[in-house]
Length: 383
Length: 118
Image (cartoon, rainbow over all chains, first blue to last red):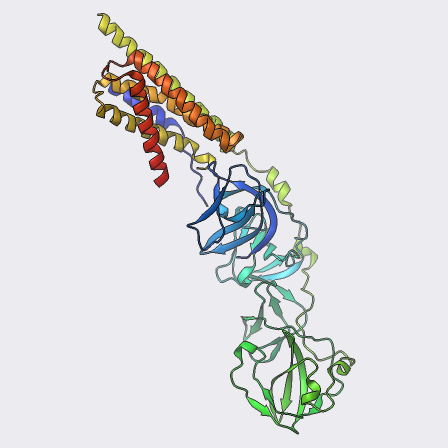
């Protein structure tokens, strides 16, 4: 009896138990995925209220994903089925079924890693893709693709011989730009500066041998110079140290009627024009609504001033610096890489076959054992 | 349950079913060792089939096919087990069909409760 029990238990545990270990930005290049679990996957209307599911996407349902979000270290996808049932699901509960379109991810610009702990590479532009296992250290100079025209934060990146995709959110990786940038903090001009993508709008510049990262609040209008740079004030106007409107506290000086004001730079921010000026030896920023210049300064006509020669003004909206050809190198397309992948022993089909074989083995063992046990018993009854 | 977890799920289901049905069998008065062994063996014959067919249908057909197949298979199992019990059990207090019904209802019901909480 004991032997039989040992055999039964042995057969049960002979079946290999294989449980696969599980190993932002809002927009992502569209891809398709299906629920990983045969029980389907629950979806939620709100990432912050995961106690109330609004439905379940069945196993094999093809889901379209064009949005990913990272909350508390977990990545979620906003998925929609063909009937347009939509909701947030954990990306770890999905299997990629159709990759994103990778057009426009050519490696061509100079970039730099600013994330303190370096950045991890993925096989594609989204958290649904597997990590390549490569990590690029902080301060590494890299070759990158331009910021995605689909307004996602993913960049293709190359460091030495390593290639992959990285989420450039939180200014983890920035692109080097040509030209000049006016630094708000001290009103100095940076000639080497990096810019992050359109989502977080940050700028990095070198100061005392170290890179400083700050928010980029405004755009420089930057294509013209005033023929006349000095105007007489017609009314009182406050002078601020910084252009950053959120930092405005107290003015550093009040321009008085009759003061002569020298205009140095101009900048635009959310429909308000600002000018970096010098008055009575003090330098700072003044704000004026568009077209209001004539009310404050004698002979000041913004549109007329625009006609003059381009010079001196500062602007950040220039071209990113292109990497030299030998820095870019040959890139192996992901499709070719896939061909080299080893045979997947734990594929869906193999697991099902293995399970069926295991089940068959158990059933067969049980039938044989049952026949033997009951035959023995009959014999002993007959004896 | 992911595809990779199917073998684990099947083993868990089989072990739990055996444990529940043996305990319930003892409760209803089945005390003969051979009878208990037969309950274990009958479950080893029916449980893997009841598990693998719905899962395979779910993977290759749909969730609906899985649900329908579970009900059909449970009914088939009920009668199959009753027939086997009639042939092999020495326990005669309760009708074989009723024994099969009690054991299967208990394992299915308790299994559902466990699945709900785990």
